[in-house]
Length: 175
Image: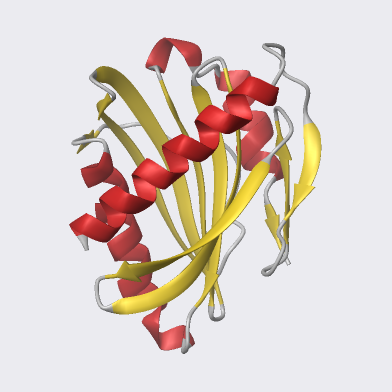
């Protein structure tokens, strides 16, 4: 799982690097929608999307990531559909572990803005490193029937403003 998660992280970082070149340094909130699995979210810049096959601790899924980066902070929503709704607890736990491992991080006490929008929700806040720099990860992992979502912000802690985190997390609505 770690190899797939690491490969997914590298691909995600490459996507964000490409998106950065097309973004303005100012927050320009716009509504974005999921392609294959429907959701609505506000992103601070023009989003980019890609789909990749991942393994969630033995559960293979095709996850689509829709993301935007601004000033070194990435705002992203991943969405996938499982074969069976009974797999959601295992999938959410696998996503939680992979996200923390991807930044070599550890959980920190903090809360995610907004109310959970799914049947099952796991909130994760962690501190770690990416690219040799300290980062903070804020993620809400949730399930609605067979659909799973990861709604996350990752970047330098000083660059993640509470107002922007609230706008992003409270705007997310799965369909």
